[in-house]
Image (cartoon, each protein chain N blue to C red):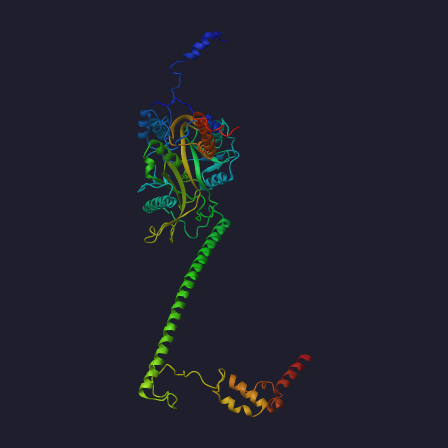
Length: 287
Length: 316
């Protein structure tokens, strides 16, 4: 096995700094320097490499538990410049390798996953993890805000569309109403009714008789807060104070007399039961 | 008292020792056994002792190292419980010998030396001591654990699972690098600082003739230490912990921090060259202008205008 004679020490590494100055001056002569072109005189001593590998490698019969290494096939070539594809390739490699390793652990009956109650020092400190969590939450918040803004924009656009649609519908409805009125007038003229007759409105159904009908909920001449259904108005002429009281009763209902709980009555005045007890106990203490 | 010998006699006696007195020459020893084939056969016949990984790693760096690269080094120190961190070493011509001495003093078998040049370029020396081999890498695309993008976390000192892409078996130099990475980055089984669980995975992948390193936390929902629920492996996810970096192999040397060159990367271009090229590109604009001017002058000189017949027509 022939070892190469060129004994490269670390001097070549140090001279690299001087090379920069040289390279800048040299580069003026040959303009088209191709960086990707492999150098012709590169050293590759395969036998020496394999010999060194033999020197340093562990025995072949070493148990897998000492190595914990897994070889994973890459299905396709990875484009270095495509960050996402590259990172995905690394992730899948790690995932496949881990699955394979865990299956081996299970078959060997070795513990490999950390139990929930096993607390020990971690690679990253709690303070750092708090920062990480804060950043993740901030990102999440940002995303949510962006989402809300987007939704608001969409809602605005939708609202405009809906508004326009409603306006169209209203205009259409109005048109229809006017047309129906015109139709009705025509019908009246044809049937020979006078316009100003007393019962002019009677007996005609427009759209099932519900177009000009007043709703039952509205009560004419009754204020919205009146519970008595307008009867309170009738009792308002009795006197100024009475008027006020009745008005309030109609609004809130009659709540009964207030402030009579602490008034003395004949029974409470005649009852001396509470006083005697105190006197007896007091005498005992004095003795 | 015996008779005194002449000087010539003593030299003769030293030069030609008796066959019985002379010790037999020791064969070259390797991890597998002896290089002499007969010895290897004898060794195989004997009961092989139980293998114990006693790998110890020295991690150190050069002076004037960039803060980012220092963080990377410290991250690796936290990831590898079997390593010893040492003070900075002066990056001189004699650093190889110095480092070899340091490794011997610290009782280590491997070394990672981070060398920073011009506050820009980071080189990583990976060496097996004292007999070699050693590899010099250019480190690029460095992201440390401190970055908040890398959200994972795992036990300090837990033994990692190492995954290698299949193209490490392609060539001899990749095989050698794989073996070195395996021995350096794998925590020994019975190490006192090692934890008994495996909750992270190292990825070594060759893409574009560079070795890319990633470290992921293994996240699995489980109840007991060694039992996974049904379909647990399918639900397993990985979260990146960091650090991440890319190693571009420059040279492989036969010895420790020096020696004969076994491999040289034909595609490697030094960052100095790249910077010089970029400078040249920037300077190109001005150079073009100057060239255009000189070209114009040359053209004017080579093609002079003919004298005008009517130039003096209106002169009195």
